Length: 323
Ligand SMILES: NC(=O)c1ccc[n+]([C@@H]2O[C@H](COP(=O)([O-])OP(=O)(O)OC[C@H]3O[C@@H](n4cnc5c(N)ncnc54)[C@H](O)[C@@H]3O)[C@@H](O)[C@H]2O)c1
Image (cartoon, rainbow, N blue to C red; front, side, top):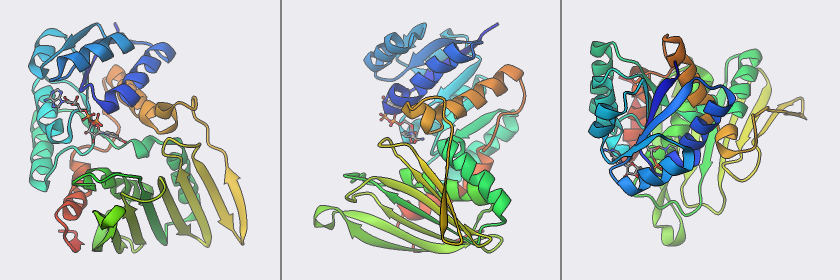
């Protein structure tokens, strides 16, 4: 029997990455039916229902949970609604793939983690960098090169004057934890200006991971170029992953003794959802649901520190130290 999947949210992420991932999973691997899509803006839900072939569209979470007879939920709603919609799905005993950030405060993410534990629920947090082929390969190369001595994340975006960029910066924050298999020990955070007339804030961080690797971030939401790059020094080698962020193929290289070797990375296609890990993330979630086993990580509990550092940035704090 095909598992019945519901997509909560019909905004950018649903249209650009989750809808295409679900449609392609159904074609490539099968075993699912696209049972329903819901959005509080019913017209958006109906538009994406037609585009991706969902059976029904709904204008409320409760209506879809009551009517669609779901076996699995993907939650990609406005950031403030992720946690409440995930709770509703948890109440309906559905396994959930929950977009980042799983909650907007440390208290809320801890409380959600506790609810998952009490309900013996299954919630996988969607940090797509953990599934991005170039970063998965980077992690394999790092595992072979020895522990990271230092790691640097550069995030640059164009014209992103979001009131709070920390909910996007959480990608870099979580990716460094993923790549090093370590948590943050302590961070010193400094804020600068960027954009026309300095109207947005840049964020600059230096600190250490447990285990001693030094970490550094430069995050510039209003830069002249898009870039997301991870540079790791380990065992005398330099490993660099440059994510294409929608403009070009990711580039991955290993530099040793002054010689650079480019590493090829395989992706199912050059479509955005295939290159950026969304397809692989959705596929890993759905295969786990089909098997009835544990979901891949990270769990909500494992995401608490990423949210804590995101909150420190959002509040303009200058220090973060693990509790
Ligand atoms: N992993 C990534 O790279 C990535 C990229 C973009 C967005 N996201 C995440 O995906 C989620 C959605 O982002 P987006 O860019 O699509 O935002 P968006 O604003 O384009 O869409 C969100 C949609 O959710 C709907 N919504 C809000 N509350 C709802 C509720 N209670 N029930 C049903 N629908 C509701 C809104 O009407 C809207 O259509 C966010 O959590 C965001 O952080 C992740």
